[in-house]
Image (cartoon, rainbow, N blue to C red; front, side, top):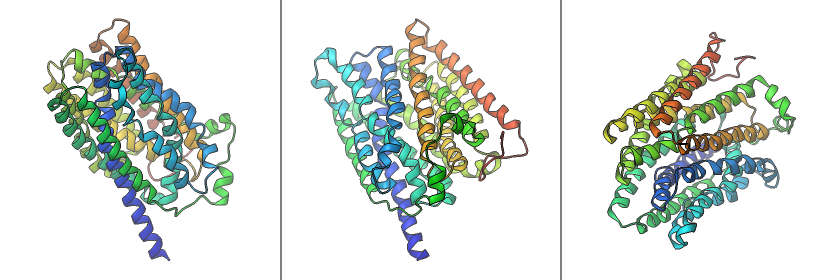
Length: 415
């Protein structure tokens, strides 16, 4: 019986890694090139901010439906299927923009980013529960690292490939082909999700403990409060400049799609390198410290990009960004998994809502400041200071309890 269970768990592990690998091949289309596509269609800086931030607003509300949606299915694998399909239309819908009248094209691109977020919010909150239902807690840190490694390899390949294709083919058919191909990649990812099997459903005790409770009570739990602080500070500090960087590269450094593909490729290549070492670093430093130091690295990245005289120098900032953001992404999820109970759907929902709130307010705040007339260079420097302060804050919180570490344990009150 244990052999059968081990075989199923290994298969689940494989499918979870392959899911994100194929998804990563698709993801470059939206994370690296959607904003450039919108600029080519006549988008303003505020439009770019809306493209980056409005999905976050939708995600805040759609995530709240995750518990209700999950209750209608026998297990988390079944529950995640339909919302994840809806989410994957984010790759296909932008391809239809050129068919609209010119005055409606940017609005359609914004809608293309917003509508799939209805499914993304539900699937995101359930997805972490699904991971904990299909593999043991002991292998989750390794799985998360392997998933981000596969994601970064895939994004590197597709960023370079899509960038070359966009330069070689005429506009807008080049973007349309890219979005259709990305949608195809995402459906292969969806197939791998359908191959997962439940192994570790929540026990009756865990389900009872995870029933909805007042938000005040949830935030009074020291473990969850630590997760909330780390999540919001790190994700907001990163996303404040998320929509500003492509604006700066396009305006100040005159980057082409090919250069943007190379910029994205360098980012994820650096993410790959940090992924290979992250497990050993986590044992020594703990998740919160890694996130704090990563924010300091992201501050340096913003300064390098702001002051770079050309795209070649800006690639140094891309490498720092890729390494820092990959470390934050992996360690944030590990931090959540360590500090919350198995099957705690409410904690997962609120965790993702905090994440999505930061994704909403960060980009719109950054682009709003640029729209007031402040240069992208000044905004990047301001964002660097925010990241510097956030990193110092998280490291200071950790240093309050220097005898404890965040890794592989549930920390004591106040840690």
